[in-house]
Length: 206
Image (cartoon, rainbow, N blue to C red; front, top):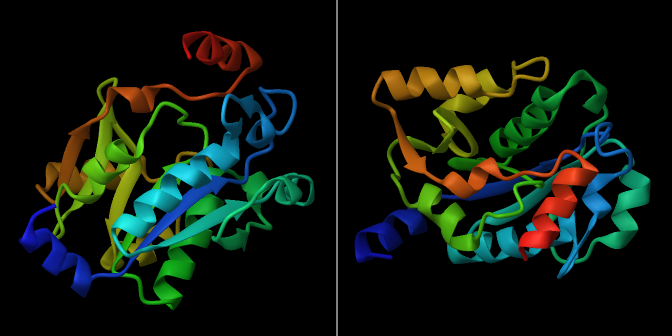
């Protein structure tokens, strides 16, 4: 990281937030607890993103919803737990939780991450975080912009008004068209775990 980037880090306050509130209906069980080589799926995400948050002097937050009481005992480490009471309404409700917390605690940047993108490394997340400190950034794969995505404080009001299960894709596209977002090629972000077959396929690659 350059001296310029370090200086900018000292002036900013970043919240790295993992969204993990879904019911895992396609998986057939809480996929947050799916077994990977180095632990359960969500714990592996926490471990990676705790390292990322530490490198940017940020804080790590985790949004839980469905099966929260079942999942919590299997997690360790230091993170801010945000409970999404409206998880049934879709992913947007988890983004709302993250944005409201970031706004209330005066974070200048919010990195939205998905727990099930199992192929992403700390370097991948830092690629998004370091892409720009004056504009947004997001992963670009399979011809689309998606998580992990970095937002600015001025986006929080819009994010807090999201509804349904479409997330913030429209906002990302609008910022990109306006030259206010950097697209980061992250082909590994296309790998996620939604079904048991996908989990088996991923495990066979390890």
